[in-house]
Image (cartoon, rainbow, N blue to C red; front, side):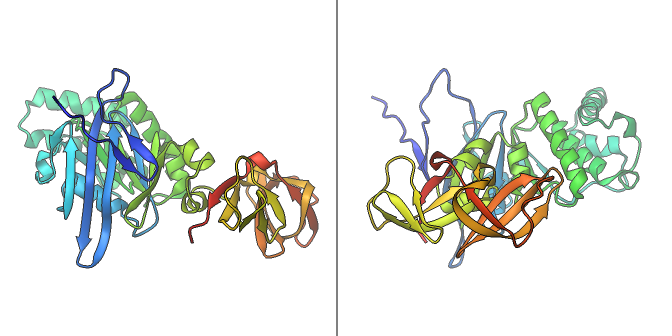
Length: 367
């Protein structure tokens, strides 16, 4: 009798690897992947599945392990232990050129002496495809990234955003199993980054490519991703959709890293949380008395001008359509939002604030 494989579990996320008619096809499986550099653990036995056609973002601060994981997936590094499975085949020790993976780097890595057409078609030429097929594929790839008009230009005649599109077209042209994008927008200015985010979403939607996108920018991850894999200290802190990561953080690291939050720490007593702000209600079932925990409240959930708590406005930050209001409430910092036209949140003014109990998420404080 065949014994079913054990499901992989990581940080509260359970992957059921049993066959199902409704289950998404798995493009990549990472099982127990670890990378050690002497006594330093860069990646700590990570388990992860990437679904066919999704855009998964590896997000995390510097040193969290996201780039190490990317390098192990594409074969630029050898793992200390664990396996990398692509399309059901063990590729752990396969060389880079045998993994059917395309990589888009931050520095574009275009050949300066070649035209756009030549850059995009180079990989196909190395595969000895017929010229007619190369021309057809290159034309389609350039049309997909919106650069058909620039086919005969050299990289030096292109803007940064256009060069990034050429690098992406160079991956799309040979239809790799997975496209890895390592901080691809890091060299662009803020406005161009936003434009390229929209373009990448469009290209992903139209091509159905499986993309693993690496960034340290949480706003970029929220904007682009089907799912986010947030890493910390070489491990997966949480894996989920952007909305799950923002609305349902599983620990205080996730709550603090994704978005902006007021994190109010205290001790549970009689079903409430004793804090510097005061005694705060905990929605749902509270843990045992004496438990150290924190309430996480997003700025948009805080109402200014009314509520049970009082503080003083320490600073306001103008953001165009809104103000970010930073409030000192005793020893606690509270971050709220107000319309940009609000006239009663001057720095130094007293302000009342509050939120509905169910708007605050309680998390155990493991610090």
